[in-house]
Amino acid sequence: MKRILIGLFFFCLIPGQNLEVSFMRFYANDHDFIADYRLLASERFDKPHLQVFYSDKKMPILKDWVDANGESLKREVLEYGDDKKMLRQFFLNVENKPDSLIQFGKNEIWSEEFRKVLENNSHGYFDGQESKFILNESEQIDSILFTTVRGEHYGKINFIYDHLGLLSGETWTSFPGEKIIRRFAYSSDMLTGRKEIWEYDRQGQEISHVALTQPAPGTLYKTPPPRFGNRLDEISIILEDILSKTLDVPFDVFIRKTNYDLMVLTNGDSLMIHLVEMGDQRVKFKIVGEKEELTMPKFRVESITSKYGERIYP
Image 1 (cartoon, rainbow, N blue to C red):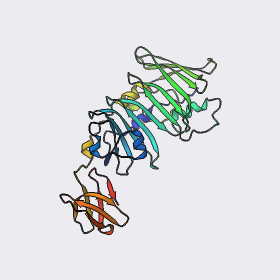
Image 2: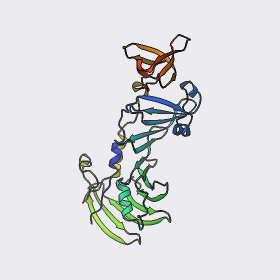
Image 3: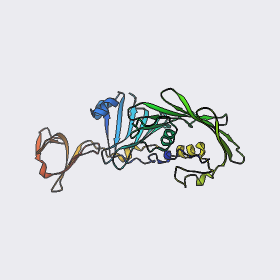
Image 4: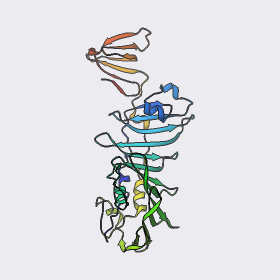
């Protein structure tokens, strides 16, 4: 029997140590973020708020929930494809450690394998489906929850570990009805690296029993998934690779903060301003230190950049 050995390889694709932040915005909560109802920078002090960091493509790449004391409560890292559609959401807890990850799309390989054993998987709604990988307190993969684009849970895989923290079993459950449709049991020999796998069907009947040899950690990712044959990817090894990646974001390094907006004219002159209004034909502004409101035809303006590094115009 050939079992598709689907490692949690894509955790290695988590955004790396350096998130290229271009500018940031502040919101009172997640609802206001969705509505793009922003806070002024001065309005966030001494209040719980959400600060969102954007790429130079104006895509949110990091959401940081902050309490009234300015301490981070949780974070969410966002990753996109070339079409700007969401690929992954990676969640960090208050200690900035991995908590869970959501992988979007029907091509996520654990969900593909799960749907193969569903009694009825023809109802669709899998194109935008979610696979949520949840870690336990020991930073091991605890479960994977599958959800359709309609928000309906259709399956879950639970991972079972022994007292040494080694994977000892998997239980695949379909929803609704909470029916066990597949089950695996593992036995590991830590000295030889040999692992035995028993597979059981929905009736609890054994349908396969194989013995596998674990590959060396250095060769684990050389074969892209799905992988076939007599090799087993140890989840513990994969998690070591995940947790070795730091996700500390040097916020102030990448965010070009100033006290004023910057307007560059077509003749090369630069003005430090307070932007008042961006009209269809003209720009209203105040020069720093002046009270008088001025206007400038837009054809004379090369660019305007906000104090937080966001390109306002063009």
